Length: 274
Image 1 (cartoon, rainbow, N blue to C red):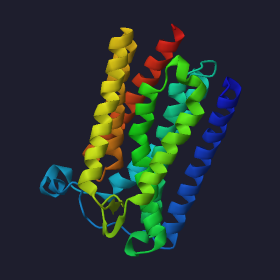
Image 2 (image 1 turned 180 degrees about the vertical axis):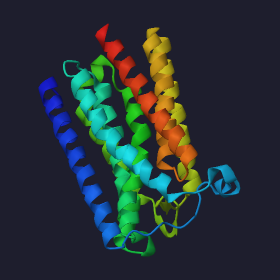
Image 3 (image 1 turned 120 degrees about the vertical axis):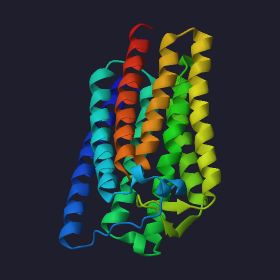
Image 4 (image 1 turned 135 degrees about the vertical axis):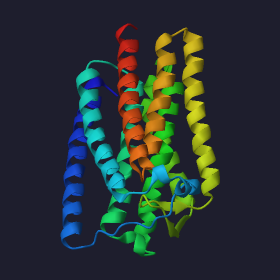
């Protein structure tokens, strides 16, 4: 993919994310006016959260977390256009996969605003699968950035990106949804949830180890910083998408913002000096 083509796609995605913010805002206002906004049940995931009084569930924190994600995505697209406009780097292409993962959380937003969680409809199942798709692709985006960004692999970036997306789609398609169990965040829970959470944890660990291995192979301080910043970023993302309280909201937002800043800054330094 040429720089011109990549930058054009980034601009299209930036405008698209702005359009999504507008649509979600309109949906929220309409749902309030038509009284379709229904607070999700108080099912806490993980279960032990309900026994911690300082992590009290609050739907306001859930809605603010959506606002953080919706603002975060176009802001990141803008920064990618400004900072990496003349830089050929595969990591930025894969980072857009993470941004799409954040946008996939809008399916939870729709579930709450339209009161879909009260139904057992196909639309509710589809919303759950969109969220599962996004949460699968989020760590995969960083894993691909760590192991598929060598110079000899840049010609295959588009192919690798498509494989990453298709794997996430297939994974989300084959995992059953439990529409009878809706979390306090508006999440449609998955079947085999403990197994899926273990898979996510292993992916997070693999991402960090992959960047560290690259750092050792290349004797690169920047790759070590990429490992720590991607860890912080993914931790912040995980807290934010699981947020039903203000502690998670604050920690998740801080981790996501600071982790993203460090990740993009170190990428810029890495390619500026290479």
